[in-house]
Amino acid sequence: GSTKMTSNQLSKEIDFCPHQKLKQNPTDTKSTVT
Image (cartoon, rainbow, N blue to C red; front, top):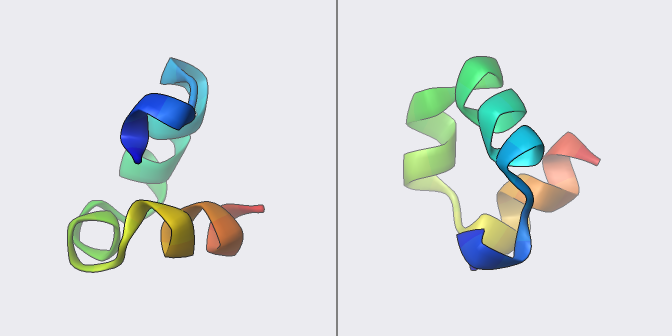
């Protein structure tokens, strides 16, 4: 899951919504961010 994303993407996600990222699945979070 997270391995597919890049460090930049992960950083952006965590900064955007840490609790959301933990709650949602990597795929869902990626779709939301994109």
